[in-house]
Image (cartoon, rainbow, N blue to C red):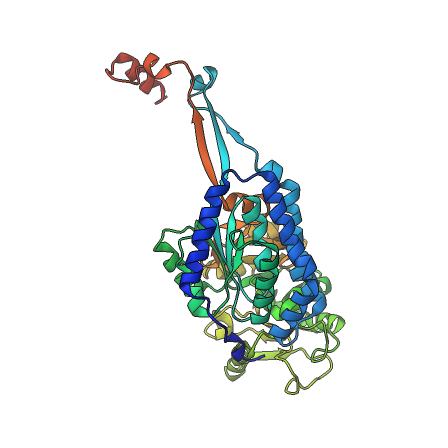
Length: 484
């Protein structure tokens, strides 16, 4: 598929504004959002995904040129329903009033109480990306709907068939005052970012996030930014290489590496570099004996990204880096209907190369050798904080050293990417890789207002303790007690 896919009818700003106002009116008219209403909206979101499974999978295949249908079923269909079901199961507990201790304790003794009520924010805006277009549209709804909010969604213009399918499917199940999808290109995205939502969730590139955050700031809209960056892999000397490269390449080749959490570069002990390369070749051959016509191997999404990734590889070759293309059947990638790229290793590239400067978002993997594991920690800490970090090995002390002396959004040990699948763990970045987190209970809280409530005792303690004018010795005595 070429960049001509980007041509879409932009939703006019006045239509978006009108939809937002209608959602805000409906939210206020509804009043307290009941458990039943929240459960029903989650159920209808699940129904949208289940009823449109085939349509969504076919749309994603069309948008990518080729996308593994098995992968789509797992990463976008099943993985959308799982968090929605999880929210239904746990939402009653999440909604409970959270009691807090009263300070000073004396107030509690006389009957004062303090608690937190989790209240919906109102209308949440979602800008979802193209790499997992269904999952990253529907999975956030688990927190948004369980918290009692309404939602407007702007999906990516890079996957127009999927965006159109989701818009129709959601409109068939939800009134636009509950959930609405707007479609269009960058102009629509820019207008959408400037709407006066009660919260805005953006998933995408760090460079775009700066524009989104700037636009949101005009209305002081709080933002959650799920970005990316260069997620490192540290392979320890204690690692069993075959299962390590099996796990690493299964994650790297999933969605052809077009994952915000994809391993972006690997550290390998210098004496095990040859072993790593050979093991990686064996792992790829085992999972993908062929690539060009293999239905399990997904295409790069469009020509623009295809050229970008090939440009990284060509620059590395020109600079003298050792480039290893893993092509088990020695296929000719020039003859293909899509934009598939063979998994490619770039060994010990210079840090000035684009492959080490930019988030790769494709099946290209730089590999750097190291002498001491502290060198890997120093390297990670000298660069932007990544969304994910991965360590392979059985040395628990070394694993703790790597994890505790680096900062990343999340960590998976002895695998890659998998921490995102844990609904009980918050998912999010730190610094340039993101702001805020969600999933599970953390998603419910992210899209709720934690309203602090204090109920005063019937006893007039303020007067008893001299806290009201005219002030005197009682107040001084109380104030002094707080300084101890």
